[in-house]
Amino acid sequence: MKLWGRGNKTKQQAAVDEVVARLTGDRCWNDIALDAGVAAVRDGHLAAGLALLRETRDDHELRSLRGEALGEAAVGQSDAIAGLFSEQLPRADAADILVWMGTTLIVEAWRIRGDSVAKEVGEDRFRLFHATLRHARDPLLAAADLVPEDPTPWASLLTYARGMQLGRDEEDSLWRNVIQRRPTHFHAHTLRLQALAAKWGGSHEEMFEFARDAATTAPPGNPLTAILPIAHAEFRLAEMMRHLERGDEAAAISLLMNYFSPEVTAEVGVAERKWSTTAGPHPYSVVAHNVFGWTMLAIGDDARARWHLSRTNERPSSLPWTYEGDEKERFAEAILRLGIA
Image 1 (spheres, rainbow, N blue to C red):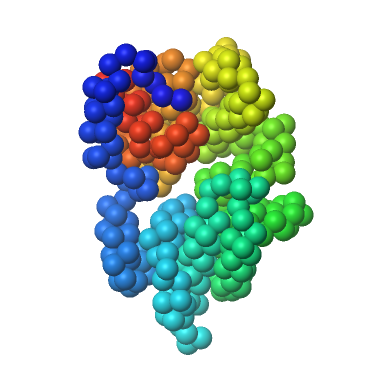
Image 2 (spheres, helix red, strand yellow):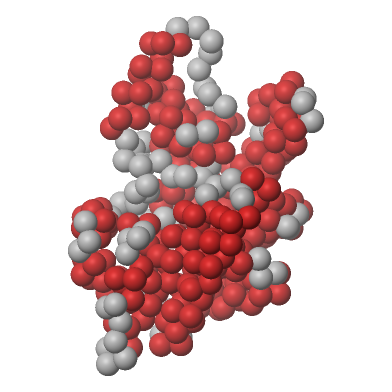
């Protein structure tokens, strides 16, 4: 939903377009080395990606973030990554390659599927999606076997399981393997939230129970508390779509304008303060600043929204901005409204 009123659209849209042109998309992190590495990998320099992964072996959160980013950057190069593997490699080096290969195959598969709901994905495209995705399983399991303490391959397998529709028992098993190794794994929590959402066969109740428990048990200063406002954004979108599918546009607009009741505002406020009061460096801090900035803006707390969004370095995250349209446009509108563009 756009933040602008009806008047003076041309001038306002021009301002939005100007901000959008300078935004850094698909790079929601504070990691200069990763910026350079992503560019190098896109140009075919795979050694740069391996060097970045090598640095993350003792930092599972950073390993997850870099692994996902490098998987996106290497789309179309999964065979080349596979060609780097050798049985003679040290275990840690082999695991780096296998994790990257599996993650890249997952990204390649989901690019084939697209973002459409299942009923809008053609049968031929689904077959190609599953055929590609199926190849991600073995390298990820092999990586998990080589470095048993690493949660990264298990987190990637959560996306694999959802795409292959393996069912709740398999997803639960994969989830346990992640949290046994890293109980506060940020990326895995966002994947688990999606798996529990109603649109993927879960329920709103189950999703909120998970999100509230994660936010409650997260240590102070950990951005994992952002999982709760993500759940609210997910539910808000689902309810809005339900109204629109019934043709009740007035109800959809009312929901968007009035969703953040005093009760909802209070609980996301607790989550926000639990993190921001003692927040320290974290690979996913820019994502959390986006999430809480969006949430505070929706609530009407412009001061807190400004505080969070001014700390994103103008790098919008996908969630929750894409729930309201194009992430760059929605982010640009937000920082213009807050006077920090």
